[in-house]
Amino acid sequence: MSRSYPKSLFLVVALIYTAGLATVSLLKLNSDALSAVEFKNADKVFHFLAYFGLTLLWEAYYFKQKQSIQGFPSLKIALAAIIFGIIIEILQKGATRYRSFEYLDIVANSTGVILAVLSLYILKHFNKLKL
Figure 1 (cartoon, rainbow, N blue to C red):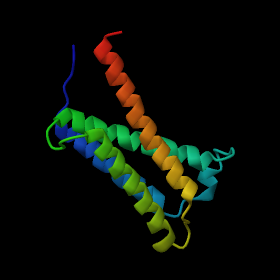
Figure 2 (cartoon, rainbow, N blue to C red; figure 1 turned 90 degrees about the vertical axis):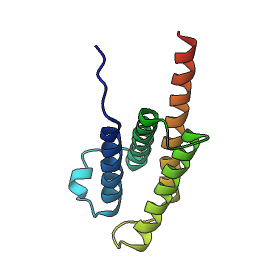
Figure 3 (tube, helix red, strand yellow; figure 1 turned 180 degrees about the vertical axis):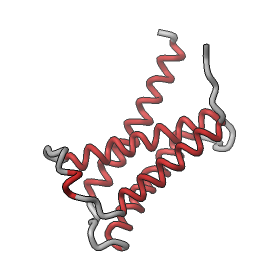
Figure 4 (cartoon, helix red, strand yellow; figure 1 turned 90 degrees about the horizontal axis):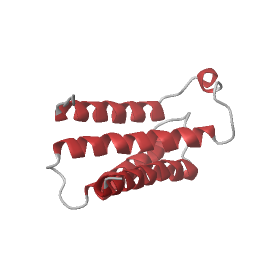
């Protein structure tokens, strides 16, 4: 039995995730809470996963409603997510005294976005092949 969720639910979840990501990115985080995960470039893995998830949520919303974005929706969603990540990095430098701008964060964010889009593309392709 398949359950159908309203498209507004997908929008609400995507908006809450986006707002939460922006908030977490701009707040001063307790370093004790972050020390539980310690390995080289752990923060870059977080950036990658956060933007991978961001892209998947907006893709899910688009494919649930299938009408507002014309042309290449995945490309538009990816560009919007990458630009969002760049804006957050700029805000970290200019609007806070406790966060910093890092080019490698933009690379990690963008890599998460691109891999999410490629993963969805591959899944859609294989789904059409009915393997």
